[in-house]
Each structure stands twice: as C-alpha cells, then as structure tokens.
Length: 377
Image 1 (tube, one colour):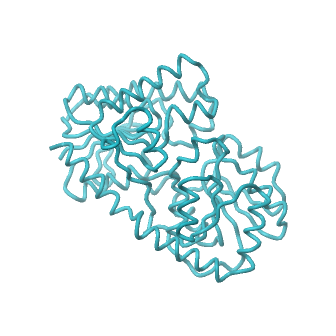
Image 2 (spheres, helix red, strand yellow):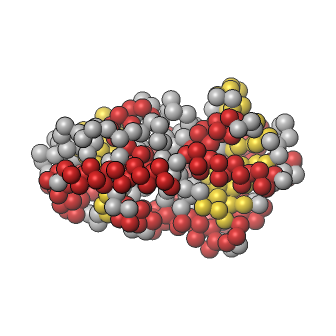
Image 3 (tube, rainbow, N blue to C red):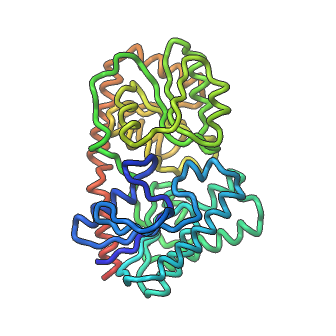
C-alpha cells in the first residue's frame, strides 16, 4: 500500500517534540508498506525507509511556531499549505492519504491530494482547531474564524474516517456534525522503549518537560516551588513565556533550556520523583492528549495534571498520580508524596502498567494501519 502522510511537524527521536508520525510511519514501512511523508523542511531524504519530502518556508517544529506572533504563525501555516499542496500533487499515486492536524491548514494539501488522486482521506485531529486558537485569542477575526470553521467541516466531510486523540476531541468532532461512526479514537502513545522505569531518585525532584507557550501555565509550578523552597524543580523546554517564568521563579527552580533530543527528556524523567503536565485554564485545552503525560506513564513516575476531564480520569482512575487545582494544592500533594516514597513507587508502577496495557505504540500504530487498509480497500 502506498501511503501519502501529511504532517507539518515530522520529528524523529533526534529532535524534540511529538514523534507520533515518525513512529507510526516507520512501523508502516516495517510492515511492508510505502510511506511518502510531506513535511516542513528542506529537500528529500530517506529516514528509516520513509520517503521524506521537505518543503521550505514553514516552521518545522511546534516550539518555534508557538514562539512567534499569531500573525507570523498564521502566515507560515499558509505558506506550508501552499508548498505542501504542490508536493502532494506529485506522484506516486497514493492508495490512501493520512493527514494530521494541527495546524488545520494541513487540510488544504489533504483535500487537494484527495481530489487529484481520487484517493480516500483519513484526517487526524490532535488538537481541536480552530476552536483552540479561537479560545486562546490567537484567531480573533470573525471572518477568519468562519473560514477556518468552513475548512474544518470540509475536511471532516471529505474524510472517510476522522481519528481523534482523546474522548474530548472525539466529542468536539462529533459536535461539528460528523457521524459518530466515522470517528475513531486512537490516543497518543507511550514511548515504552525510550522511557523506562528507573530506581527511586536519590532526591525528590519535580520536573516539567515540553513547550513553554501560552497554552502551558507554569505559574502553578512556580507557585508550588516558592512554597517548597527545599524541593528542587527542573522545568525543561522553550517557548514564548520561558523568559517570563524564569525571571519569576525562586532559586530552587532550574531552567536548563530546550532539550537537545528525546533521550535528554527521558533522562530527566528517570531522575524525577514526579512529572508535571500543566495547561492554562481554557476549556478546550482539557481535551488535549499530551505526549508528556504518556511518557510520564512509560517512565514509571507519578503524573501530576491540572486539567479536569480525561487527563484527570486517567491518573485518578488508575491511581497513577494526582489532579491539582492550583499552586497551593500542588505544593501540598508534592509534600505528601515526598513523605511517602512507597506511594511514589506504587503510583509509578501503576502508570507503567497503564502505558503497557493501553498506550503501547505498536498496538496503536497497528490500529491506525488497519484503519488505513480498510479505507484503501
């Protein structure tokens, strides 16, 4: 089967960020299929058997995109949509098209390729766009909102199947008028190979790894650190608000900067006693399916989340961490964990079991491949 895979942010383990498209694509190739990945970048290359076609003029990683202004980001997304459309209209002819959003503008090359090749489209929704940028204030123009919603609905209408990465995203897609039977839930996966349980940390260190943009509210972590001056915090990552949070942080908070690769992130998780998954208090962000949470489970560390909904249910129903409301609540629960190391180990074991049972990447990649083969037939 020839698969045309469209994703602006194609990242391997040598980079930092979500590697879902790389991990899925290389597994498709291992099963004997051909994958042509159209993404942001320069030139053409082969990565683990994946034919990677990079198009210039756009952000190739999400951190860089979030660090720019809203206008710069939207223009870059539009440039990529145009360049990716030209690349997607060149051969070979695909048996199926697999496009993943955000950005929502990936729908432009996806729809163009589906029409050109008369091939079925599977559209994946990792975050609810345009709802997320609208609620965050990044897409304030009413006309632009209407255009974005029209593109969203056209992508859903033309797709044979829509993949949602969380129950909340699935509900949002159905709320946009998509028949429930057309929507398939395939969440983010845990990297069980790279993130491995390690012996208990020598000191009780709290970590965050990921983007430091408008959607990620690290003020909760900084508030908790101020209340626990003898507890070390490591906040690893980069983004628009990193400098602001770094200047406001007490001395027990370390900002090492962006991770050089995924191995560095895994190493930080391994030496942590608990890992944070934090978002701004915006309703649509509660539907997220964040990589950092599933990698925390894989690392066998208690996961601390501040979003009600699916993320809270995962950690509470599986006794794999805590939900917190604010900095004071976070400080109280971290102090309790430090005083109960046996609970840290137990919650970590529960998280690893959850990762192996529900979020194994081989399992989820196989589920997507079965879906692609189904629609291709």
